[in-house]
Amino acid sequence: MKFISQRTLLLGLCGLSLLLIPLLHRLLAPIFRAPPIQPLTASQPASPTSGFIMDTLSFIQFQNERQEVFLSARRATSEDTDNRILLTGIAAKLYDSKGKTVRIQSGEAVYDNSREEITLRKSVRITTDDFTGTTDELHYYPEVKLAETSDKIELSRSGLRITGTGFNYDMKTSELLIGGHGRVHCVLD
Image 1 (cartoon, rainbow, N blue to C red):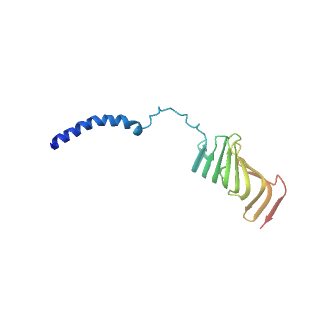
Image 2 (image 1 turned 180 degrees about the vertical axis):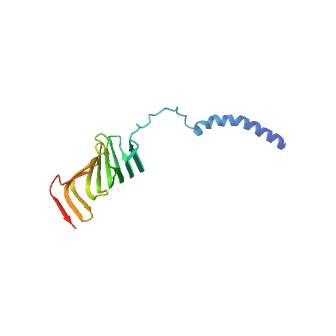
Image 3 (image 1 turned 90 degrees about the vertical axis):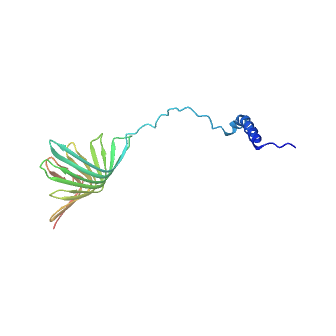
């Protein structure tokens, strides 16, 4: 019996391996092959919208080097389908032609750019040096500096309380009209 040396056995196995590796590669490659790479295609991005969401908004407007409006809102949102901006948590300071400050607070407001109108809703509070007023809804027209409502309004100042339906305040002339749409009730304290 003839014995094969370890060296001969090792050389034989290496030679056999060199022959078997390419053969195994050809046989097993379809099983372990990665899927073919698809060519990259450019997809159209979703159409951009012009809507937005902002948290904590502050806005200041000047005219003739004089501040006319300071507005802050907790949140502002807009959709691309209309010209309106919804504001929540409103606090505004408006300045009339005589420099008097008009403060307005409300739960929400809608600014309609196409009509140049701001509609304030939800516990609207108006404060000036002369009176304090509350109503459910108030329309403000910045172009003509006019605030008005056809809803119930309550105005008060020291020693006087007026309730009525309808209110018109011209910030250019500081003229105030109450009760254009019904009765006015006045209580003197």
